[in-house]
Amino acid sequence: MQIVIHYHEIALKGRNRPFFIDRLAANLRLAMADIPGSRVHSLSGRLLVEADDDAPWSLLRERLSAVFGVANFAPARSVSLDLEAAAAAVVEHALRDSFESFRVTTKRSHKGFPKTSMEIDREIGGAVKLATHARVDLEHPERTIFVEVLRDRILFASEKHAGPGGFPVGSSGRLVALLSGGIDSPVAAWRLMKRGCKVVFVHFHAFPLLDRTTIEKARTLAGQLTRWQFHSRLLLVPFAPVQQAIVAHCPTPLRVVLYRRFMVRIAERLAARQRAKALVTGESLGQVASQTLDNMAVIDAAATMPILRPLVGMDKEEIVQEARRIGTFETSTLPDMDCCQLFTPPHPATAAKLDEVRTAEQALDVNALIDAALAATEEERFTFPTVGARNEHPH
Image 1: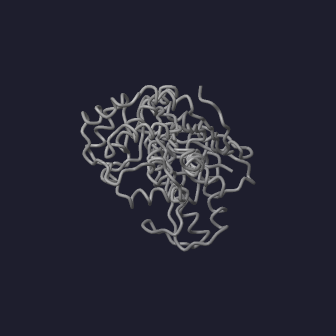
Image 2 (image 1 turned 90 degrees about the vertical axis):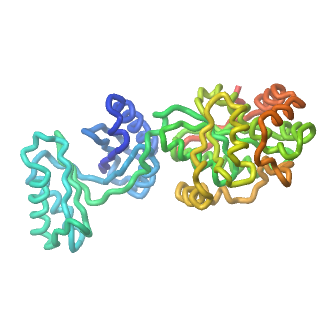
Image 3 (image 1 turned 30 degrees about the vertical axis):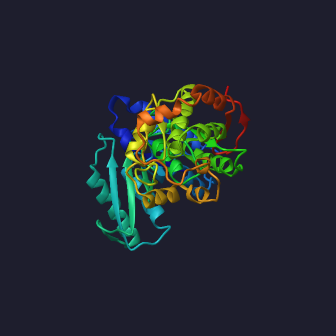
């Protein structure tokens, strides 16, 4: 079986294009690692995936539809660089099914071929029309036959499937995502994966003050998201001691902002260990009382690296729809006890002032709390296609 892979944004990369194509090819090999006979070849302006003929198409389609950088893909057949042979092969394939209307669409990357794209359309289309008695419909055909003329072969396909687009994971650097058990943060991480980033997940939990529900949800979500980047790390940070210190020594309305500033500091230290260049969160402006522009500015002031918020301008329904599309919604909506719900004040500050927050933090041994959290952090690793995890200490 042969599958033609087309990319879109990668084609605009100029001199850097080979790097992106190589990364995409490597990711396709990872996605197909457990499929018998799978191979990936680079052709002119496209990639070709091969697999054994008995490989299930449903599995191939599922895998390819989750490889970032793929614009679309099509199961294809290959013939020699001969138009008559191509027309005969297309007709043979077309006769296996019935359709009332069709069109032929040709891309000719081999400009030395003696026929133009329109001439190829007409010649193959005429042969199909004669054999099937279907009518040609250029606007709304029941069947489209895609023909691609390469330097050493002609490929044709009768179906095309959309890929996720974007850039191949690993082509845009590494970042750390603050992964809660909710709906938003998995979507934020997924969006940065789509832009080519490798994502390391950090989950803050309040065990043993709360149960392990959010830890289990974070594990499940990390496993689900690994489908899109093949290898993942999940860092589990015990956050209850930090929260207890804040509750004991700081003003009640500032608790949530202080929680977030500590999360940023700890995540940055972990990011440095992972050679990551930025943090990503699932915050959306105004979605909850604490996610205001004022509070975000105060939280950012605790950071020394960029904090990316890809959902900042999205409303809840948009985020929910995207969570459903990527397959994390059901897990995210399972009941849990998130650490940010612990000791949450009834009226959190919505316009925290940086000087007030810094004054509140003077009552805390900030570095000692961070060091203790880092020392107790645990690491789990996930792989796809074979999703699993093993516990490790990150040091």
